[in-house]
Image (cartoon, rainbow, N blue to C red; front, side, top):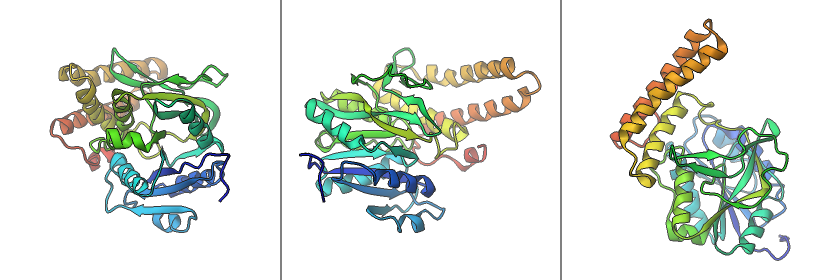
Length: 321
């Protein structure tokens, strides 16, 4: 195997698949074009109910791990991470299955690690898959007034305004590049985050351990966005609410629960009013129904958080999608 330059560090790329084999296969094809060849691909399947396994078994150059049920994003990634650690990985890239990557992605990441020795993890510049120049993520920020991780550059056309390497308090999990020595120090992803906020939690823990997290604008990927929950559906909002409360408890314990309990109702009235203004009275009943389902999903997410339930979204909420 011919290595790029003097870099011989082994990189493990971990992808979680759940009923998304077409996206995963496309992602693998883009990874096969990476210039940095000292990499291995691990696919962790979260008990897919489609024909994912049949297709993934025919893919070359991957190691496939099948789980007995849908354990969630964090748990599945942790299985892949443990496998990588046992097999001498120097770096690990957590990558969403609905992405494609630039051919120099790993080269750019490793170059930054060599240049900045105090770095613990790196973020990529993420574009929309269907709009190749529109930014989805160009570094993160924790908005103190709401304790909420946000995307810089969101929905902006890339005109070079985010071309600097900068520290970021939030790395989006669509592409999370981390050194294994850091994982050995801070631990794995928190399994309680079934879906969402696990990346924000991990970033905060890395920074708390004394490492820097950097945004690398030359490391690029393209993302299909929210494929696993069919967009910002009721299911998406359920996970968002439940994981957000867990995030607050872990990193902003001073925030009172009543504040977060009131917030879904405020968003309900705000979004309903905006839809009424923008789309008119004729569309209002349909939009109101959607907002009611979102509100109910958030309320159930709050109740499940209080019950310490961190498993898969209830089927009734999935039916609202």
